[in-house]
Amino acid sequence: MTYSKKRNIILATIIFLLGILAGGKIINEEQHLKNVNLFLVNGVIDGDTIKLANKKKVRLLGINSPEKGECFYNQGRDDLRDLILNKKVKLEKDITDQDIYGRWLRYVILEKENGDNLLVNDWLVRQGLAFDISSAPNNRYRNLLASAEEEAKREKRGL
Image (cartoon, rainbow, N blue to C red):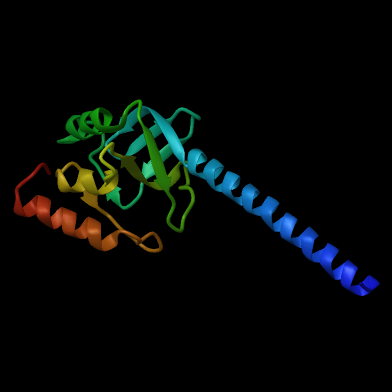
């Protein structure tokens, strides 16, 4: 066997082994990212703002719930608290990362044991506890939230 062929075989073997190692690393990174994407909710400020165990505040994207002193404020806050307090949620970013107050802007997803995921933003609007306020550039669930508000109005739920 010539020196050139040996060198090519050695290089191919090295590339193959690096591919295997890189593949294992990618899997581990994916698993790590999956775990990092889950956040423990340890506070509910109002019907559209939560606090995470890592001290970050999250403003739910695409919705607006009543402020303190307004009708349905307590119900929105309490129902959101009952739904996600002390549970792990996934946070999904759209275009804008933070608002002017430094709060993360996210869609909040609660994973259910039966495998169904619940988009909390949508649930709040469907229950009549928040309004759809989708606005550019964060429009990923614009149509879903608009239909949720129409359903809540039609069924005379909440707000």
